[in-house]
Amino acid sequence: GDLFGHRRGLDGELRIRLDRLRIGLRRLRQARRKLMREGEVPWFHYQSHFADVFARGGFDVVLGNPPWLRSEAIPSEVRRQLIGRYHWWRAQRRSYGNCPDLSVAFLERALELAAPGGLVAMLVPAKLTSAGYAAVARHALASTTKLHAIADLTGCTNAEFNATVYPLALITSKTAPPRGHRVRTVLSPVRDGGVRQSELRGGGPWLLVRSGIRRVVAGLERHHPRLGETVTCHLGLKTGLNRIFLNPPDGLEPEALRWAVRGRDLKPFRCQCRVRLLWTHDALGRPSYHVPARARAYLESHDAELRARRDFQGGPPWMLFRARPAAARYRVVWADLARQLTAVALTTRRDLERIALNSCYVAPMTSAAKADALAAWLNSTWLRSTARLGAVPASGGFARFNAQVVARLPLPDSALTDPTLARLARAARAGEGIQAELDDRVAIHLGLSSSAQNALRAAVDRTAGDSR
Image (cartoon, rainbow, N blue to C red; front, side, top):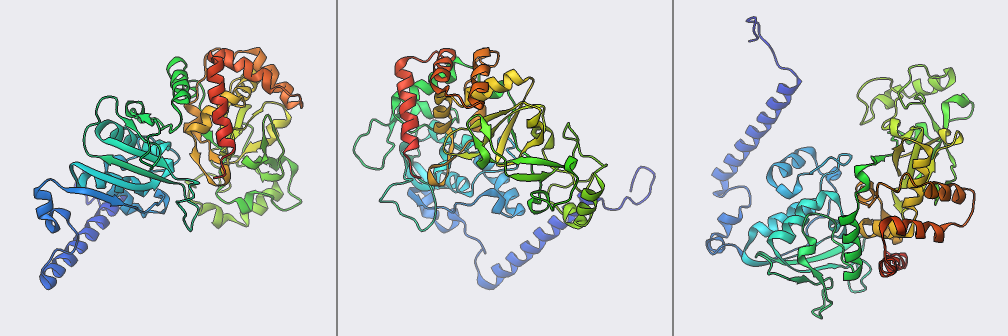
């Protein structure tokens, strides 16, 4: 009953809870019937089935090639169970709804099953070395286990798969790492110098590169603020129904049309748009109830589909998602998927007609000069190299430069107010060659020595030749 003595009934939250309880009760009854019929518990339980092994502390060796499955492909009920069961599988921060790959939970479980001092060897996605959702797993592995090898097998001729995958071999022991321990970055027993395990702690990306490059990147992180402390990075606009909003029929009002900016449309400092976007928001990115007549009639003919979109939660049925940052007056846009970090400043009146889609990331800025300076900064050789080292690998030599990758990049306070950087961006947009002068200017801001510049340039050359 409620405070007035009336029957309250079930609200939506209580109905969901009741349904879950009924499902749990039904499963419990099924398990009890199977137990009575077959004389054994209807699930696999390591401590019961291998009681003698766990009496000695666990398995000496755990080998695995676990399922590589993105969280979006896992049923919501299973995701809830994983979140409640596995510490490493809980997303530490929301990144557009992405939780870890399923292999992270298997990796944590493998270490649980290993005895103290036992060995765990797993084949996992290479993106676990850099993805933000794997930060907790990386820190735990580097802090509490003795890592023997972390070998990226992408492109390895001895590691062939009938699918496009980027495998990482990870071998570790369930014991504390000794002081000064080094981790091999190849599977071969030949010593390759490796990586000092202490450098892998903290949850940041694992840079499996030569020590000279690691020292340069570590120095940049130590001496300069991160870009994310000053600039907010957003994923570009999402329509939820591209076939309705992109390249709409001819005859719609011009004021309802914009140019869509896709990742493939971006070149350094410039973009060439080829796709029209049906724009249903105002200049500030707020959804508009007053859509021109012909555009409104077209949208109303798809009303049911628009309301059924996954992200739609009320308002005009034609509203778009993440529209405000995508429509900011001054913006820097870069491609999510690219061979190298590629940024463009959208600052002119003409650029107001351009809206970045979710194959791009967007950073709203407070002025045209700061937007130009940031675009120049991101297009420098040194920032491209640092970003590529921390990016998630993709096929064909591409990488994903998501918000977390770019937010980790160094950005001194002096960079955004440097008129030279802004001038160089404008000159590059006009077609002038400015790369050498830009790199010299950025090197001054970062305090890069000649040897540090050579190390970062070598990293760019190495990834540019990568045929993944």
